[in-house]
Length: 324
Image 1 (cartoon, rainbow, N blue to C red):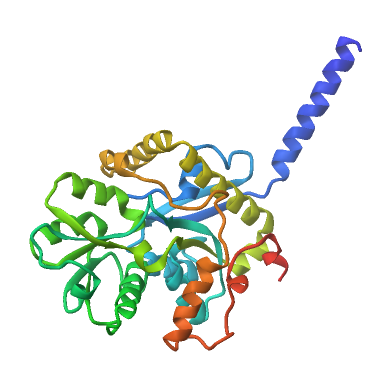
Image 2 (image 1 turned 45 degrees about the vertical axis):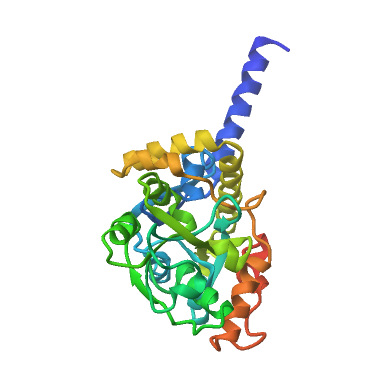
């Protein structure tokens, strides 16, 4: 092959490569960040997983909790939300056509929500939380339902504890000052929990795995109409976010470094990144039906859903979602 023909071939190859890149649909996913946290799609962006895909993500502020994130999603202020599974299901039952795209976090022996008291507290177990005040980051989400499920399992009324909404960064402070009896650090708040434990004087009374077993704690959520309008972008977004979940499990030290950098850029305390224990999601970064069906069964038991009204397959994302 002559130099001239090789040059033509190289030019043609370059043109086709650029044409392939240009053909990718440009889609921006706006989202609300979580204080002290880094979602898998944020990690994916930091790792460059969305480069060349046409996908970009844009942080447009902070969410006070999962339900607030879902309200923003329903109103069209963002393209993705993130909330506890029970909150997602409640939102769907209320009429929002959402799709659970991928597990944002999970709970297992390494990563879980922990309920703490001061070391000299008389509270020793789940039965003792009845009548006590518990700091949680928001109502109607994972910690709320974990408390209700724990009380139910102990044979107590599900509303026997008094839940108080406290932002994640203040959970330690309100507990040490005696403003609440218990502070619940969610599985997504291991950074705040680690910092609080380092200061000493706290005692764990139970974790959510004791109540729920190993399960996805929550989901990143998309609107079904958005998925149908941008099927390729939705598929790539889910695949690369799940890939980032696997990266975090396989490269914990590197993930903490990325975490610290991202927190610093957001004006948050980068030191807490050292306490990040992972996302707690199974290998592959994708859900199983129990992750959703468990909470469907709870909502049926509470009378918020009719038997058979909703199934896990109706909620979980699949590449076929766009055609259904």
